[in-house]
Length: 66
Image 1: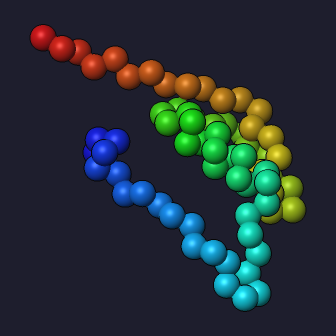
Image 2 (image 1 turned 90 degrees about the vertical axis):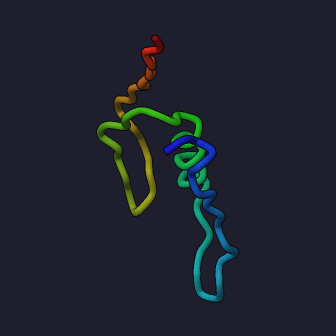
């Protein structure tokens, strides 16, 4: 699936009784978006909030062209 074919996810405003994302979740989502391709290992979550990713790797694809 190419980048342009991917659906755009939009977050709706929270309804009554729902909570918004914490700053930590927003930062984690932003990190994942910026990473684009890669792996996150050993993600630590405390009280339902991401705290630390001990090791991150970035993958780079090299497409072979003839």
